[in-house]
Length: 159
Image 1 (cartoon, rainbow, N blue to C red):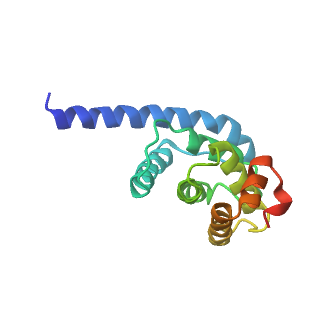
Image 2 (cartoon, helix red, strand yellow; image 1 turned 120 degrees about the vertical axis):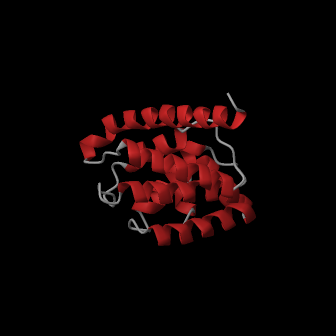
């Protein structure tokens, strides 16, 4: 077997494995009317890989997509029509924030912060979310007291 063919078959195998993992999340999200198809999941994984490449990041699993789907399935601003698109945008925002906060916030805490802003002051607007989280990241990097409040969960200082 030629080396490029080997890597292509490996990529396909990983894509199938990741797709199966995310399909299991449908068990939780379907009660909220949100279901991803295999093709939608594959598209999301391909988008994720491009996002990771663009931000110079490496991930060894698919946990972020799964957590975003699980955490955001209860949002009043997401329905099945915009579900995949919203999750793709949230992936992009998540990895942008990981870089902007210098990986100092855990994945789960960052997902919770993004959800808080998305459902709160942003009212489901992805554009406003990007803007507010950019302000958050700038403040996180420059304000020690604010950064400490994030780690202690003191949300009233976030606005």
